[in-house]
Length: 423
Ligand code: KE4
Image 1 (cartoon, helix red, strand yellow):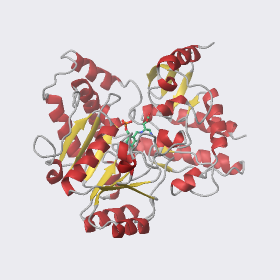
Image 2 (cartoon, protein in one colour; image 1 turned 30 degrees about the vertical axis):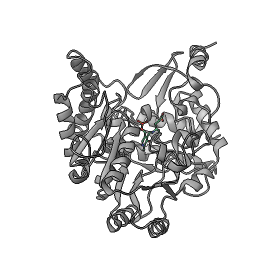
Image 3 (tube, helix red, strand yellow; image 1 turned 90 degrees about the horizontal axis):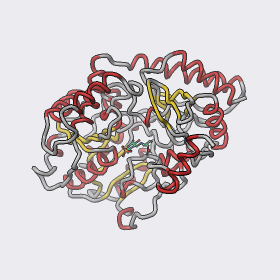
């Protein structure tokens, strides 16, 4: 038996499903997950010493590639001063200054420990600020495992086939209005049915948890207008897209300014960090200034701040986006060419360093269309690529990431392996 299998058997005895996050269990692609013992650059080394070109990038944080020396040194230096203080520390001020400088909508920011905490706190803050209770979210969008948002959710929930988690009381779910993405009429209807009672719209501006879906022209502008017209807080969940699609994320690229932004992943440089920020008049509703409580023992942890600051500084000082965009285009064009040559109905939505593979005749513009894409073909391509050293996300409802440490060599190897998998 190989090392990963042995580790998985042991893990399953003690950890539900043998994993600490469901999507890692390979449930929708079959087989058992490999265990990783080392990661460097754009490669993972498994417990059985197989090297894999990594398109998961630990679900987004590793934009510079794994084990980047600048991040490693920053964490080592911080470690020499201690691991956690439980008091304010200088690194938290520097991190706040960086985020406010980089993210257009953020005037004030609060650090937390995960993307889930960031979205959960943003929702609570929007409800506290407006005094309203309803929230609009979009089918297929995933905002972490927040009770009121695990309704028609994407990512692991969708992968496991239960986008509506058990354990969420009806009383919670009824405060959440779920609409189709890319449909402004549905948004207008929701506001006319619940006038003055919608606290917030929360949206992944580019949904990337039911595969990658891009907004139709005018859609995000329409959400912004609807929120402005109704006194509703617009929350961009940029946990995935923030600092990835350009340093200022979707809001910088589109010029659309949300009222609050949820952040995570890249700002932790691989350590556990989330953050949420936005307009001062809203953020100042947070304790200890205002009535909305939010807290965290390890929020602003010095090691995590060191890793995140190093990551953001590198993005500012030496932006990788041209390289990432070029590789993203190269890869999506190459895969499209191969699929067309073989007459296979494959959609490869791609923006910057994000792309996904939908086995579908037509472009996928919403959750329903994502669900209608062909899963068995994805399973086949996933397993074939994995056997040949290419690690794609283990679900058709995730998005692939390219890091700054990927190069043309890895891209051409990947196109080759996808061609083989499609044969
Ligand atoms: P975390 O709580 O996992 O740090 O972040 C939750 C979250 C919030 N918002 C968006 C847009 C996200 O994509 C996520 C988490 N993304 C998934 C991958 N699609 C994390 C992977 C996992 O759950 O193991």
